[in-house]
Image (cartoon, rainbow, N blue to C red; front, side, top):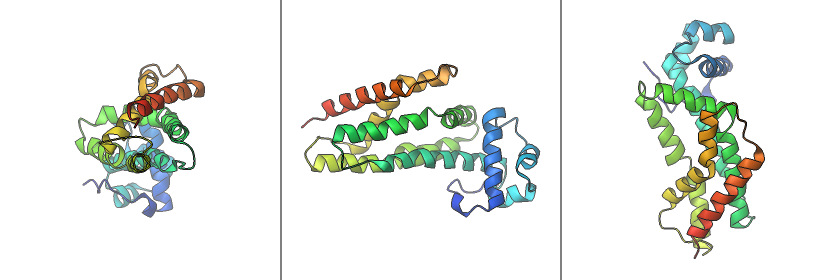
Length: 206
């Protein structure tokens, strides 16, 4: 039986964290189907009982790996600096967000999820609820604040926040997925993010 996908990662034992790290590395480099519990135990130590007690089974481990990565990426959006002007604040947070999205870990995660989401629909549901739905709340709150200060005008804050992030990651995300050997530079990220923020602000001017 798979444990609840809202697994509280902070409650994992030190052994559980080692198992989670080992599972992540093996899932990313070998694939979920090709990774056995024996391989994870060989990397992290412990036993099958350790895995069953903390994660339920290999599927539960996959959910925990994905949950942790989604949480790390979503936390970037809590770092919005309200002391900066709107353009610079949005560029700063979107730049960090896109850097995270294009990181080796997130690229590996995306490829892993695409392979498994048809078999495990709850995986996609968990990512959607914790990422696009709940993860953007800090950005939604910031856009609401900007509207209250009459800096921009927005009708649907959640939709607008999601669209800004989609524009920010833009074609560089697709390129990184399809052409993994073509490294994206920080200058390319900054250029794409700046253009996305300019388009966004121009579309929502008072």
